[in-house]
Image (cartoon, rainbow, N blue to C red):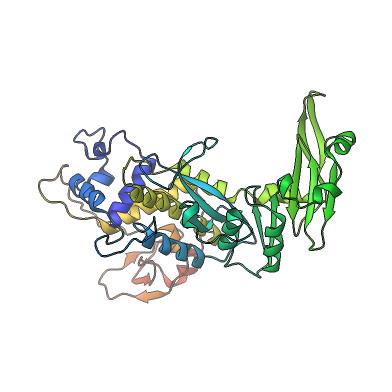
Length: 428
């Protein structure tokens, strides 16, 4: 299974028109990294029989996701336990592209991929996804509170960050004054773009659109209710309303806009609520962007297989963010994904039967030198010298050292002098 997952990761950034081309007998097409790891028939058998739930003994009930529910539950728990939540987070929707037969499939015309499964997600400003919920239709959400279905999604996705001083941002599909009030009672500060019909009378206390247009582009009007929820009305190309329990007008800054009337770029005043919202609202979109860079888009009529590979891509991006948080990541997503795929293939490679598809390698006279990856060398672990019971000493792997030693690192398992341990494990 490790080799199978690694092969699928390689197929996301080395794309062939047809899957069997990776095992082609033509040397210009054959990819040894995949073809030498597993036979094509074995790969297709695993893909054909891949399931995540025993459907013969499991009662699906009304759960439309029962075929992949164990995988989703495991990922949800691991995403939350891997890292502490960021202070600024956003909640938005993401689409898993799928055009097959499925009752929970959605059609959203304005999306780049209009056909697919809708997923509510909560992500930090970095793009790391903490919580997600697959939309299964209005009838599958259970009892709906007086706040409405959209507000209930926000409350469910935020139930693990109550009273921890987090700031959550969402768009006008979710936002409402009662929702922000309840979030504040739970110790969560909410900010969102609010529709006029959800302002609960605040629009009557704000300056009208005519008054703001007389003041000019960038005019601001603010009102606060008894629960300390502030509504900010700002005139840009059109009227914009921001409702927040922690942000308002001050401190204002300036924004650059193109003026059709003056035919030049002008600067206008911008309230603080709009600035912070623009800075931290794009977490889910950033995750969507990273997944779309190297996606697994092989056609499959079974929706749960398509969903599994979509969340496999999400998991790889989350793992890359964890490496960035540790300070060890200096390359982009592609080198990390390639390294991860090779590690999975090498750790799970199976020996194929029958004649080899390529000639055996020539015998190597010189003993190969074992190397350690940068992540292991600079990462945490028991980096202590140990004396090995060997006859011949080996060359120290520190580039600054030319001596031979019988000592090796307990974690890296390569020859290192005791005096070179510090330099070897801190050199970038």
